[in-house]
Length: 187
Image 1 (cartoon, helix red, strand yellow):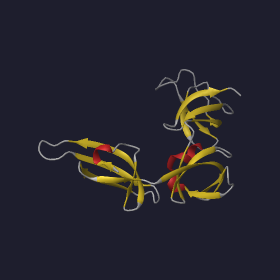
Image 2 (cartoon, rainbow, N blue to C red):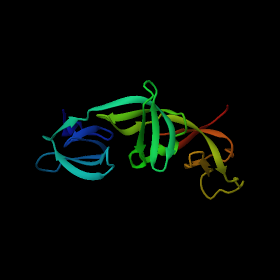
Image 3 (tube, rainbow, N blue to C red):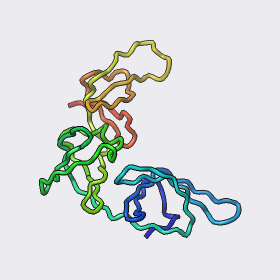
């Protein structure tokens, strides 16, 4: 059981029988009265978000979640299909539930799939992924209108800023937590 003072960004709680993840959190202590905990939460099943304020004496149940190692197989329309690496059981997760994680999914990648009961609700990616650059505009030397970066597109369709020496066909390492370029990968 969690109390309101345990709330923080990324914490998963159960409210009215459904799992929620806290996406934003703010603590405030007015001059008089109890401390207030303002949260922005996302329903991990439906993807709906809402803002709620709690007092310090409010209690929350821990979400009953389980992680399993699964392999990403393919996507079809708005469904992303995964296979359990031990039982070979296949499941799918809807695009809305995956948020920005779809920017880093490549075929045969192993991920941790989060289950609430028997329902798959989210995935955890490796911290770093290596993706191939499929589109890179040439960098014009002397273009100093800003920082020395240029936009590229990787094999999943994700766009990001990279140093000017990165070219089409290069493999780059991306931090899945921030979506930022880390380094060029030699293979």
